Length: 112
Length: 118
Image (cartoon, rainbow over the protein chains, first blue to last red):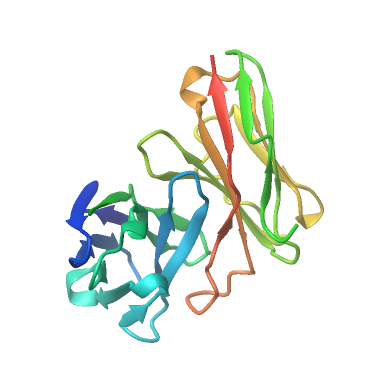
């Protein structure tokens, strides 16, 4: 069965410093992986997706993630945090039939 | 509208009552998902419809929960004999047909239906 583990429930960074949100996955085959973001009182939005084309995936708002098969990881990074990045971030893995399994989420706080 | 529409946006009910939550997906999207998000929790998968295939009901927490999708479009999630632990935000999402790893995979989410069971 497919699963994802988000290693941090909460991450706090200062504005202008790098962001790292960690995600490890478990899958019996080559997975599709996604990161979604949920801003307060807003709906969920796709940040980026990995579908085996390239291991480094660039998304919206300057975020990117690198697929590392040897480490079964798909960490989300951004070089410089902005106040507007404060939100809940979800790592997601798909199963062969298209069902998407969400991680528990990481809340990102950005301090001025 | 252009997005996924859910109704009601808020529902307060008494324990033991039945509730129905409705989802209108984006036109042309053949895949429809229901998730549940409890306070401070991640998204819990409930059920997934893909075209004319049998739905994946593996996430439904009990037989009090059921869902249907009529005409390949609108979906209704029904919770019978509601319990306080059913209180959560119920999210619906739709996407284009899943075609394996190269499929779009992007889910478009509605705003959710917040259910409170007293």
